[in-house]
Length: 181
Image 1 (cartoon, rainbow, N blue to C red):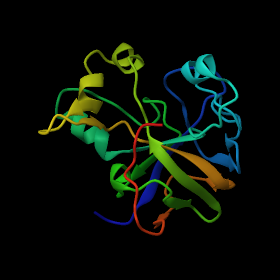
Image 2 (image 1 turned 90 degrees about the vertical axis):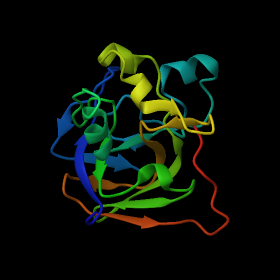
Image 3 (image 1 turned 120 degrees about the vertical axis):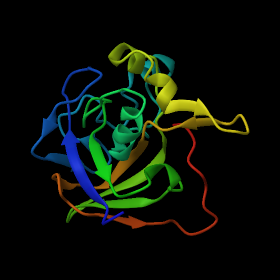
């Protein structure tokens, strides 16, 4: 693959499964995507708020790899940027293989710290019936595999555009594999 880059950026000010694509998004340190319903210091996802609204928001920003859209297309699904609720669609980077604590520099200013895997829910099947089984499955050893992207927190703010480069800074070893967050 070529250089890692931002393929699309998306945000939505209201709770909705999909997020419209934008010309740019502004990341705010410690909060997330400016104007996005999931931005904030404490949890904003409805299921998390119902459990404990005072918990820190480790899901300020959702990133998903565009290559997943190609993969699910092979099973007959058509998915485009923003339709799975992500804020940043990437290409040329294996997001799922990154360890927790990885720093992703998006464009010239913004830095996101990877906190974990997205734990997709049934809303994916409401979007396209059967899609959940494509993004959450079991491997040969019976372990659960989540493919619906990663979550992170904004460490340094900045504006992000489609086409911006993505630079990866791994944390010091030992590397901790991503788990659901």
